[in-house]
Each structure stands twice: as C-alpha cells, then as structure tokens.
Amino acid sequence: MNMVEIIGHKKMGLALTEEEISYFVKGAADGSVPDYQLAALLMAIRLNGMDHEETTALALAMTRSGDTADLSRIPGIKVDKHSTGGVGDTTTLVLAPLVAACGVPVAKMSGRGLGHTGGTLDKLESIPGFCVTMDEEAFIRQVQNIGVAVIGQTGSLAPADKTLYALRDVTSTVDSLPLIAGSIMSKKLASGADAIVLDVKTGSGAIMHTFEDSLALAKTMVEIGKLAGRPVEAVITGMEQPLGTHVGNALEVKDAVDVLAGRTRGDLLDVSLLLGAHMLVLAGAAKSTEEGKDRLMRALESGAGLEKFRELVTAQGGDPRVADNWTILPQAKVVRQVRVGRKGYVQSMDTTLLGLAAQGMGAGRVKKTDTLDYATGFVLPVRIGDQVGPDDLFFTLYARSEADADRAEQAVRSAIVIGEEPCQRPPQWYATVTSDGTVRKSK
Ligand code: URA
Image (cartoon, rainbow, N blue to C red; front, side, top):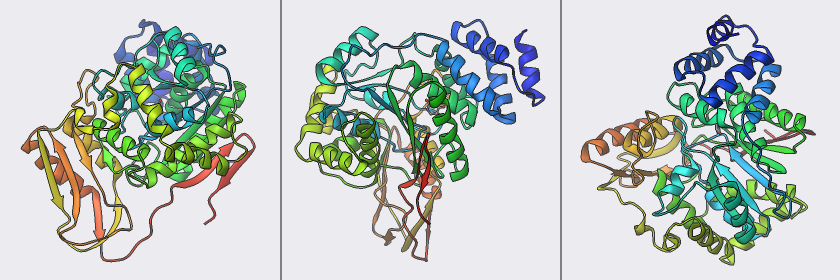
C-alpha cells in the first residue's frame, strides 16, 4: 500500500478500506506522509466524499493516532462542547466561565481559526500574556483548582487532526462532512470528556450552508459518539449572520466580556445559554435545559461568571484587567465608522464573505504560517430584520491601514443586502439531535 494508490482510489470515487484510512492517518500523525500527498487526498475526499463506514473509520483512526487524556482525577461528569465553526461565534468564552461558575468542571480543548471561521485559541491569545499550551498534568490541576481550563490540543492528542486541520485551512477542503466529523469527533473522543455537546451551525456563515447538510453532519457525529460509548448531543443553530456583533479576535473577547458583565444581550448570550444548559443537563447539574438556562443566568447576574472568567485568564498567564478594561487588548491603528447610506430593512447577509472580510483584514490566516493581527475586524450592530435609515451606524472597521479599511468597507457592504420589504429575523435554534432522535423547530 502507498499514498499514490490511496489518492488514486479516492480520485476514482472508490471507498477506502480501513487499512488505507489507518495508513494515511498514521502518516499525517507521524509526518511520514508529505503535506502535498495529504493535500491531494484531502481534495479527493472533499470532491468524492466518504460513506458512513469510511467516515466512522476515519474518526476512530484519528482518535487512535495519539493518546487519550485521562480526566478521571477531576471529580464530576466532564462535558465538552465544540462548534463546527462560525463568524463572531464566541460561545466558549461566554459559556465556559458560566458553566464552571455553576460547579460543573470545564476541561476544554479548543481550536484555531479555520477557513473563514474564527478560533477560540486565537481569540484568547489576543489577551496579553494568555497561554493556551499546557501539559495534561497542569491542565488537570487547573480544572481541579478553578473548575475551568481552555487550551489547544496537547501535542499527543489526535495529532493527525493537527496536521490535517492546518492543511484543510489552506487547501479549500474545510467544507467536507467526513473531514469535519473526523476532525471534531477525534479531538473530542481523545480529550477524555464523559459527554459532548456539539454546536452544528447552519446558514450562510456555517461550513455547512443548508439545514439538510448540517443535520446529516449532526447525525453522523452523534452516531460516532454512540459507537465510541460517549453520549453526544448536537444542537443545530443559525449562522445566517455573525452570532455576536463583534468579528475579529480581540473584538470578540470584548463582546464576550460585555455579555458576561451583563452589558449586552442578544444571540450570543442566547446560544451560549442554550449550549451551556445542554452541558449542565448532561453533567447531571440540571434536570432540563430550561432549568440549566436559569442557573447559568443566575451565575451571570450575580457576577460569578465574570469572576470565573477573571480566574481563567489569571490562571493561564493573561492580564485579568481585560474583564474590566478592554483597552488593554490590542488596538487597531485605523477605526472607521460606516453609515448605512439608505433606508430599508436588513434582508440577508453572506456571512462567509463577512468572515473572509475579517480574514482579509488580518484576523484570520490565508497561509499556514500567517501571523494574525489580533486588533483587526469589525463591529456590526445591525441584525437581519432590522429597519435602518441612511444616517444609522452600519458597521465600525478596526483595520491596520486606510487601504485595508477601504477594501473591508467594500467587502462588508457588499455582503449585506438591504431592501424595501420588512423581513423576519432568522431562528437561533433549528434542531437537537441525540441518539434518541431529532427534535426540530416547528415550521
Ligand atoms: N472544527 C473542527 O475542529 N474541525 C472541523 O473540521 C471544523 C470545525
């Protein structure tokens, strides 16, 4: 067996055998297969897909490509959460402190930006001093001490995903159901959590744009969890527009702090409460998601969530003043306010284009080796369905230069449709998938 044959089989649309899948996954993990062959195979998988058996074999081989964390020394049921990725999708920064403040341990391994979507690690690293690398021992100790830690995948967990994730980001092979399912489930199974909540996004800014594709992805990941003996609940939520009003790394930290401080309400808070409530239910800390949301809201209103965020930042070497003063975050050279310029209703957004606009400003990577500009991005206060007038603030750009701001202004404006007709706000929640079946929003 060799890589040329394996690539050739997938190029012809054949199903790969378990041995072939294990071969290339091992090669991705130990570096014995070069990036160019992996990239070719990723593109063949993206174009020709994988059947159910191949997808499961891929997720399990990727899980076996490294160690599995042993979190058994942390008392209680450890529930992890993972999003398929979105724009302004900062739920981890909101829900991790809130869930921990409710007494449920959060031992979270997060990722970096992928394609047009942002990544929790990049956002946290925008906080001066914040460190996302830690060995397993230190990770466990921190969760024992303060109830929460958010780190990058340790070197030994799902190493195949580390390689494949970075390659997918720069080869336009992110939007592939088997590759997403393998990537997410391998990390979550290897991270040692007892139960997993998945936030599967749907809409123009999600990796999967249609509800049907998002549902298929959710069902596949729940099924893989079941085979691996781990309860998994997938919540399908909307990504027709950025979840929070802020897009960009430091800006999203500010957005999360504003939510935790009770200054901002809206979709970011609502979806964080929904996902956090599922975590509390799976951990046995709430009987229903309604009770879970109430507990989380009490933690927010009492200030316990923001205090837990301060503890998290301090424990990981960051400057805790960020919880009270956002000017200690990196600041952009150019700040430009843009007015709507006409009257009407916000009809729709191409949220992938919005994510790409932020990426183009330096908030995301185009090449694997790119360094980010944490200060850049934009704040978009308008939501789909809003009525707007010519003098209303449309968005504020935070850019490296006037030329970047010019490009971004054009890109953001062209991604948002304003029309004459009133229109409805898109839903935040579409469906919940568990091993018992699917509950869908009624039409
Ligand atoms: N998040 C991941 O970890 N992997 C993906 O492929 C997509 C989102």
